[in-house]
Image (cartoon, rainbow, N blue to C red; front, side, top):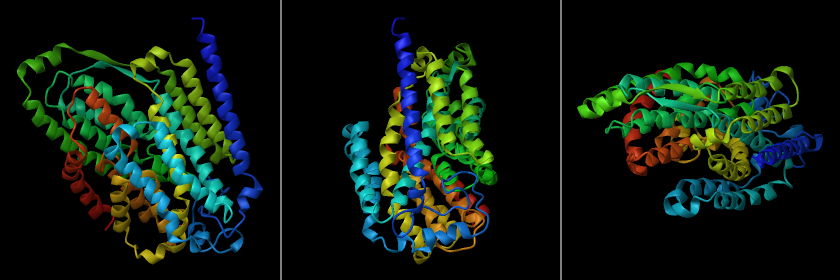
Length: 495
């Protein structure tokens, strides 16, 4: 009891330090000097709003995005025309490290310190190289990083204060309801938050059954990936789109694609689970029926804090106030959650900071290293010959399967802006932006490394003694289940 005030004081001091850092960072990023740049033009996309990536940007008309492909600030030539192609090598190397090191050096790569070292070794030289040519490109990348981590951190911490207790009957219908609920919930607390909230109750509900290996796999498909397609809060690629000028509610246009993907996957799951349920031993089903406990949600105050995060994202763009309100608001909600949520609840939820620290360590390098790639794609995108909507859907998706889907989304958004087509949103035609958004979100489920929650769900399933398939076994199952669904989506929406 004696150390309780000290613990809370440390949390408040940490909050004050974080807010001070955000205010200092924002003062640099929003200053007139940083907005003008010092060189030949910014690698950041041109917006019709404040230039900070706010959701206030409407993106109407084709000028805001396509103009960026030819010119930088002040009508000067875009830096993407002058950057050498080798400047994208650190970005490619970092993505390869993220894809391969978990397999080649699993134990060494488990350390977040090692991840941060790799990320900075590949990201910092790019920032140093770009700074004399266009300091705005570097500052814009740092600004996006702060906003990105503030959102993911807030959603992760607050959802970690919500605990779903209970054990209900593990029928195919109940399991499908779990997955469908997670798909909806992912749009409000993110795919990571929804996955962490629901995966343990779902596995606990099915703990008396023996044939359950498919359940966490479909959970990854539906909750950890395709579910979070309808809001920028749902999946990191869509939030980066919001920061680059895509309106907050634009993603609701993806509802037909979301409904098709989630609906078809739930149908496949139901019949798969129904077959597995029929193979269960009678004594296991009796045990499942007798060991039931009603579901109950603990830590409900965190629901209000999640609403506070949503308000923090929306209010700056609606009222036209500085975006620093967004970042500080999200951090404030996270700190309040840490203060009011009992430690015992988070311990029962197996909450740790390791996953969000991992994201922060890797993405500082990703945001810095990808600046030349996005600039070159904006300036020279038309030279690649990609003009069909379905090409963007599959190219974005396949790369998102093995690289992180957030930087993949940004790369192909920049490519679409560089084609020079007249676009409805940030200089990109609506259907093309839908293809990029859907591809990055849906196909992150194709491998364990396509999206952050995938490995987290696998680790929790392994901990629950469920034998998950290896890297290639999972990819095979994903191809068998998901690729026919992607084919239907291509034919229906992106021909």
